[in-house]
Image 1 (cartoon, rainbow, N blue to C red):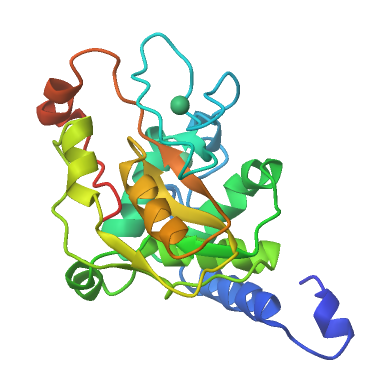
Image 2 (tube, helix red, strand yellow; image 1 turned 90 degrees about the vertical axis):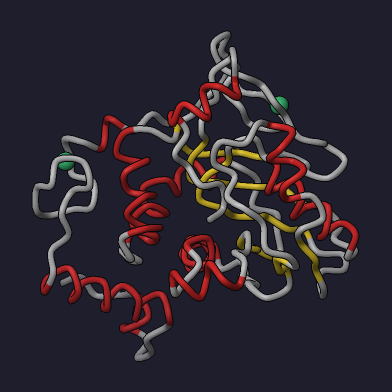
Amino acid sequence: MRVLPSQRRGTVDSQSLHFLYQYFLDLLFPPRCVECHSVGRSICGKCLPLIEWIGVPICGVCGQPLRKSVRHTCVDPRLLQWVRSAAVFSGPMRRAIHALKYSSDRNLASFLVDISYAHFATVTMEFDRIIPVPLGRIRERKRGYNQSVLLAEALSLKTRIPVDPKCLIRSRETKSQVGLSHDERKQNVDQAFSATSVADRKIILVDDVCTTGATLQSCAAALIEAGARSVSGWTLARAILPGMDLHSQLVGGKDDHQDSY
Ligand SMILES: [Zn+2]
Ligand SMILES: [Zn+2]
């Protein structure tokens, strides 16, 4: 086993403790690939290339891939400086996010941050707070955790940017975004968040999946109102909305992503 830098100094910091914990956990309960179920890694070497990483051309504001077949919904740049997502919400990335959210596989958060960190590192690092998109109280109690908090903590361990999971809250329960049109999604999360203690902060919001950006935008509105200097957003994945007949495609079950739940 490799010697950690902090062990040479005789101290073990939180990142090293996390590394050790994960190391022994993997020895005791080796993970299985979410895609092909082989034992060894949460996404194995064969399935990793199936992830569709998002590169240029993208919209400079909302980060949406610019393709003819993709519906471009965009976000309000007065609220969100920009949004970026590491990969398309499909294949192993989609299965992994589902496992993180619905199968209590919390360790997937640090694995997914590890494999997408190169993408995160390409966006500016000039932030002083990482803030996860909050769940409603009822949903968080039911699930036992908020997957966005786990992702934000994993990013914080790598970047050393402090994470603050308490300054932004979902001030009213909202219904699932599944099956809602773009406008309905916007309406559903409108003024659903409130924030404190963010005056003059440069904030990066973190979530698992971005679909229309409505949730991130509503979070940003609350943070700006509370005095944040700037707000940007980063998500692991981006749900690609078909360019035509958006509503019927969503209702037809092609979008099983539950935005922020
Ligand atoms: Zn595999
Ligand atoms: Zn855009």
